[in-house]
Length: 299
Image (cartoon, rainbow, N blue to C red; front, side):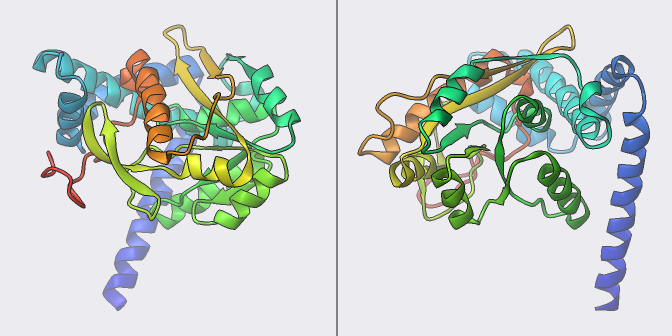
């Protein structure tokens, strides 16, 4: 027990030291941070390849048309995007809104029209490396609730919870279904990303880039239960350092009587968004883990 407490304390100490370094980097000019992210991402990919194998397997499954050389180049760009996503998060946490990079939002009026119906709006995104900064930017322009899941690291979980609670109209825990339903029935817009392969009672095995994957179907079920409108929200980090946030029109004829069909429809929209900026999607996640009749894990 003492050894476990010591290990935990040591881990928390390393985490806090890392966050302290991240805070210092967050004070640098944004242009310099972008350059540092490019260099650090290259170094991590080549010298400390955390989850590089997972990333390359995911890219091989999802982009079989690419050559191995092209996939490695895409993977390296992804690591640079990962590091930049961390710096974007730090900027959201420790800098004022006026110090965020320039951005524009397309389709905000569609969200406001859907909200005016008074039955809530489910704003669907995916796990892109721009996730943190995109949510923060959208919340600067409109009232937004967010659904969140605590990471395993308690120090980081506390940090994320505090900051998301600060900017979101309501920060709702992933397992707080009653809180989520209550927010929608109160007419709130709730943003979340249901694309990671966590097995829940609402999960089905459905195709993702053509390969069977554990997929959450809760969006269709929530829309059926609450009458909330559903629209998508995807962000892109542009080459000039600015950002574009795109909100779709509310989906027509959604939900249907088939949650699997509805979820496949949302997955296709996610795949299209990924293909537009493939290096910005979170490829380090084991999306194709073998379970419940799935093929053997490719990892």
